[in-house]
Length: 485
Picture (cartoon, helix red, strand yellow):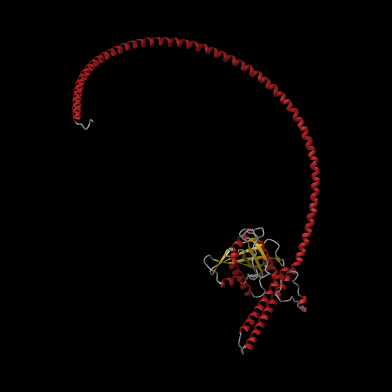
């Protein structure tokens, strides 16, 4: 049910999302939170239900949607089952009973026909239990690919007067358009009278003619409209309950007149209470209108003061502009004088700079000459020093060379004597070794000849034995005729 927040001048309404799939509401709410340019969304909240949960999200459009100069605040709800659970019908009815509008989210995939039918059936059941004006329904058809698929709306029992929009909730396309359309139809429904109820204008009595009218104030008009709608819906609900009870009575009951009288008395009391409440509300509205009327002179005075201040500011602005123009002329004159002074100062600086440059060049020339003379003297002294040091080094080198040659001669003599002595010792040693080698070779040659003689004798004996064996074998073979043909 819609509520009016007088303090914030906001009308609060509720829109329920009924989806063919479990994640339909959560997907739509996620894109609503991301679209910050279209509206301001709060935090996503969850409430536990039997077999699932209810998702809720506060959302306010940025601009454009108002009712009687009051902003609209929308509470989006979506009953969602858990992956391993199933929402009970009573829980769904309890959630959807107070919805001011519905968004039916269908899937264009032909395989989702059964899920679509369940979602449509839930909408029809919620509308049948709705008392008073029927809540508007907007249909969001989610597409799977690039090609738009059409659903058989008549076979799904989707009413032709329900607005239909194509969307792709996975990509976020069409989600905000569907929500804005739902808000628009809910606002239109709140402004229209109930079906079959004509707009009547009651004549005003003398007392009502003298009362301050509240139609000029949008906030009071919205409040009166909501109060009248609430009272009318309550009376219609009682009438429907009475008619349903009478229709369920199959047999005549003698107590019916008594019950009807009691019901009529109760209706009278309710109507009297509603009238009293309406009068109380009207009195409050009148008090509020009187307060507004009392505040109007203060507003007029404030506007007069603001207008006077505006004129004063305009006058001060003109004076400041005039002063600025005068200041610009004075600044121009001062700039010209400053430019002339800068020119003269530049000329003086050029003359002084030329004088200083000449003096500096003369000083540099004199210092250059002094430096050249000093350098020449130092170079001459350095050359003399180098020449003297060269002669001294040549003399030292000749003396050291003579000493070195003398040392080398002595060393050569010593080395020649040592080498000759060592050669004699080596020659004697080699002679002794050769003699020993000749004697050893002579002994070994004699031993070798003896060994050869013994070996020759042994070889001759073996040859004779072999020859005798061969001859004896040949004799035996000759004896056997079978070997020789």
